[in-house]
Length: 64
Image (cartoon, rainbow, N blue to C red; front, side):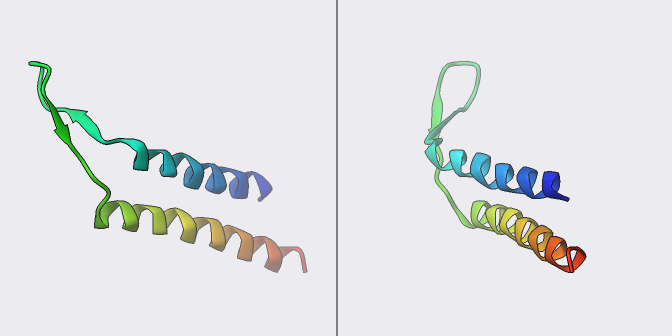
């Protein structure tokens, strides 16, 4: 159970690195397109946070 919590926490931390991405390659010609954080990213991070909180809640229930 503690391993699941650590992995969920790591997912949140690694997901935060996506905020720093500002450009992605557009094609093989070397052009880049600008990207930004939008609703999809927020939903993605909420899913990681929900997973983490659910794992913590489950650990508390099992430790009683």
